[in-house]
Image (cartoon, rainbow, N blue to C red; front, side, top):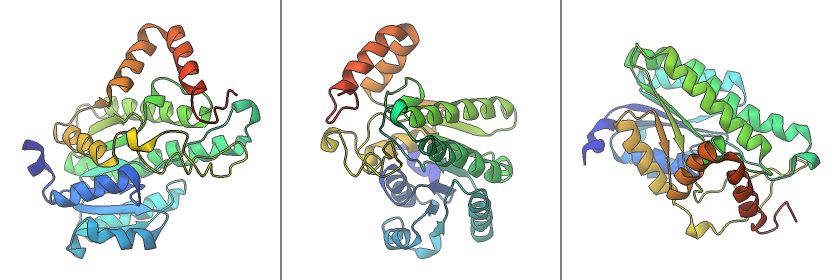
Length: 274
């Protein structure tokens, strides 16, 4: 398949690489011959998983990084260039979710979501950008359908994903003439740990998912869509039929979409509307 050769010997940084879409992407890139930099807060967990990315330890670098901390983002890119000499692709995947009505919410939850999701993307991109410009590389923001059509009880999540989309769309225009690829990648519901780790009104982890995870797109399938989009140097990808329909309806029939979204969330297990 045509996309497979595209990643040979490319240096790819993946944040949030210890689980879910990030880990699945790191494994796929490794299998396609890339040098992979795994970044997450748990160094020990990444080191345990690194052999599943590549059997050759010289082709994988694990960096402990909290993307909400600017110095960690700077150090991540410095260590990548020191080890591999370049950066070809940055996948901004690290992120948090939440589930609580805004009226009940401690504002620290919104600040945490923005710090990790939005500022994490901005800070990593800032320090990778000079290297990406040298290689005419690509930067990806993994957002969500919630970055196009808002989800109730996820104010911080939707706001951060909308903000990432605005940031990356602007960045793409600024670098329209110098070869930088900018991809806004919006999966639909994907099976991962993100809903278990989602923050509640007081900032504590939800600890369970309201969805039937086994019926959702797998992280591996999502990673395959990401790889194909990168190889084609796409600027936007919206996944799943439901996701595409939601975005289209939101643009054409926003008030109807609001009512449909309300009804959908009201049917969730332990719905915040009940």
